[in-house]
Image (cartoon, rainbow, N blue to C red; front, side):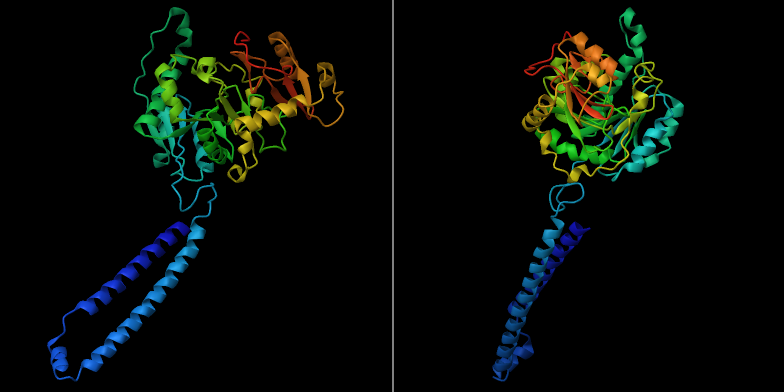
Length: 438
């Protein structure tokens, strides 16, 4: 509103000044009429003409003074329309970046639950266009998506054919089709629609009220910090009782690619697209050749919740972990917070001090509730099997991908146990992951 008002004032001032200049120049340079010439010849109009000129000069001076005041008023309004708006961008500065939401859909009519929440919480259709890319050719799902009309853009993956795979991989046909669909959909977003970033969600995800705020606030950090390659809304160990409900604003760096509602930049897609895998794209992302020691941002409390037990993974992890993930319900104004602590060097220093300055405890003390004090506490592991046993017994996810534990940062997994913060960590001096720990 203020930006429009400022533009209107500028335009009006320019037209006002220009019009008055034209009038003065016209009056100054116009030829005298016959009557005026006769009066001059008769000597009777010289004094009157001189008076007119003086009057005109005085009027012109008054108009200039008025225009000066208008320009001062414009200058005063400039400070208002250049103030940062609610999303942290200058009202008078460059336009805010558009962050599209790509919904990967197939044959779940329950995509309606996903889309309903996205549309309910979306603060701007212009800044967050929703693009639904549908594979599978499922008519009922297409009808549900189509019912949203212009609120979403509905794309249909054209190649629905089976993919030629090795005989032992026939049971994984669904994973191959998902990977093909991702590649096609991301090419549409970045190449056909020319977006510079995207947030990817699948059709079985429900989003939190501050989902859009979360990604908007972290976009500048993702763009400016080359040690980051994604922002995720997901905490793999984010079950109720394992996260701090009083720290909805707490964010982490993680070396594990979480997925399940995540943002990437076009530059990353240009890097990954030529070598995109035929199947199992998410585990492929977790390999060292793709991750290249880069991290993601993830929250203490998840901003997405999966409600899709049925899928190609046949409910793997769902009944034990995923159905109990806590979805954030408190709106956090992330765009108004100072998130500079997430930059690599600053974060690494603070995090390692917090972990290794914490009292070192034994598993039995944690398991029996014998910890003294508010915490945090540090619990060491020194081998793959040692990590898996501790993680399983403490109730956090025990699997590793290319040696990286879920939610891990520099080998450290952070979670709550009986209301106290626990850092499940390698001994001090950790240097790198061992890919054989998988």
